[in-house]
Image (tube, rainbow, N blue to C red; front, side, top):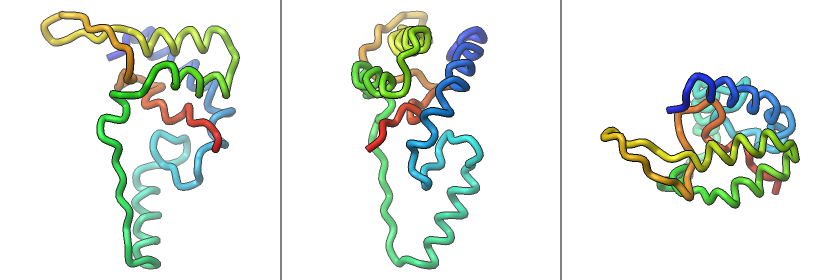
Length: 127
């Protein structure tokens, strides 16, 4: 879990990036989006259930645990060239994970969860 200082810094980065990244998301993307909620997603699903007689359910197993850091940074650079944003996000991605027993594990892929700026869907690149 991020420290209080990291949470503040993550919010600053989120507020900086969000206006430029938000327009690239699909209108039906509801997760971690400003002005959209789980209730909105359920409402849209309910509306569509009356129109269609089929459903597609998709889940990518361990997606956030396996994101390649180099690809994440490349996607991020499509939205900003701000050095301090790039520096902070790279540090957050590479920060070691501490286990319950206190052992530290280096990470070369995946994103930390539980922070203001995660999951990294806000860094989606345009098609």
